Amino acid sequence: MARTVLQQADTARALTRISHEILESNRGADDLVILGIPTRGVLLAERIGRLIVEIEPGEGTDAGLTGARRDAADLVGSLDITMYRDDLSKHPTRTPQPTQLPRQGIDGKTVVLVDDVLYSGRTIRAALDALNDLGRPRAVRLAVLVDRGHRELPIRADFVGKNLPTSRDERINVRLAEIDGVEEVTIEG
Amino acid sequence: MRHLLSTKDLSRAEAIQILDIAEDMADVQTREVKKLPTLRGKTVVNLFFEDSTRTRISFEAAAKRLSADVINFAAKGSSVSKGESLKDTAQTLAAMGADGVVIRHHASGAPQVLAQSDWIDAGVVNAGDGTHEHPTQALLDAFTMRRRLHPGASRGKDLDGVSVVIVGDILHSRVARSNLWLLRALGAQVTFVAPATLVPVGASTWPVELSFDLDATLAATRPDVLMMLRIQSERMNAAYFPNAREYARQWGLSDERLARLRPDSIVMHPGPMNRGLEISAGAADSTQSTVLEQVANGVSIRMAVLYLLLSGEREALS
Image 1 (cartoon, each protein chain N blue to C red):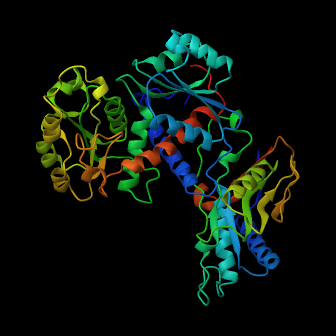
Image 2: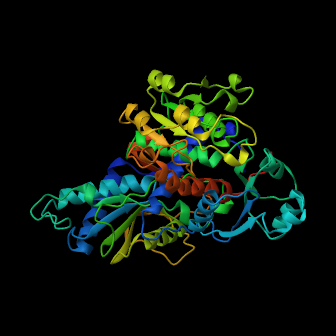
Image 3: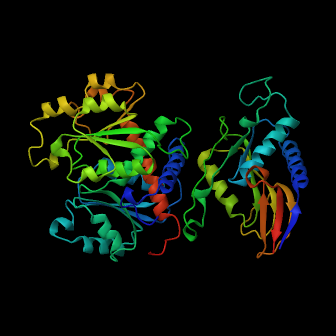
């Protein structure tokens, strides 16, 4: 039996709040890079990027474009972590997804990693390793739509859409309109 | 995927998957840190019974960029020259804990024997066996074509409707055979052009057009891709054509033939080139030539293949 815990409006509100929190903690959108972890983290990162541009359309100084409007494409990217996973030899071979960084790179930036569900923390550990090979950010933060607990590593999220206490046998399904046709977060027991 | 022995076994979906993973691997080659931790702790043995520099170092670079440990085993100066059998060599490698074996052998079918035996439980990659197949070369050729035909947007694409003309020593060429099966799987049209003495018996049953006249074929097909094969003097133990000048005049890619190609046609060569024989220096160094891209793409393709064979849970023997 699946129980719906977040509906479309809840997700939209959570992402708006997270976008504001990111801007607040970064004191604006300068030197900010939002990197989504495939598959659904990338879609969430794109939405957060659009929200941030809506909230602070002001002068983007990043690319030397003083006075120009900020563009979400300069803010958002994707970070594939397949090659950095610690459980590759325990599953059938996975197909990696592309990694795309905004053109100004991540050196000296504040990078916000975005994923749909935070669980054991192993995906984020892999993402931190992958970032290390791509450059040296000034700081790395973590935003997730759902934190379901059961961490296996000393990792925590800075921006959380919803904390959902779960048991290990339950499954969390995040469905997003772009690829799933519906927009909801459900728990299957 | 457990082994890569032949491109004949590859479905269209599998081929596109390998090419797409190679795109990700190619992105890694452009980074400052060109290394991935994916195969840490795995051991890849390059088992080369036949001379090769570029294929071996390409596999070596690929394995090292995935953080695997690499052992190079060349038959010359090894116990093989003292008469050790393939079985004993394989069992020795198994005892050393090899997870993957990249094998090149002068006998067609040697990689198959190794893969089907119970001598060693490792993923086997065919790096060229006799006159049979050279699958990673065909994959890197297809990858190079796809990148040239769809610049910046090659992911997920096939080669439907692309016309490819392969010229030269088809008889001894494992590159031509592997390319034919793979290009057909990806939807391309293939024509072989060769002197009648260098066309294998039975080629008429293959899904390929055969021609003996390069000029007529170039005029008729206006190909997207022209691939020149190396004249393998080490395999030329009979008089297949009168002499080198005659061959170059009839079947070589001269500057004059290059000028008659479509300006967007690409010229490929698996290397090493015999300049002045099958390809002129002007054609080899022209902007239409992809010879150096093929070398760079070779590392990406071999990384993709090693990743697919060695990273996941070992599939049970079927």
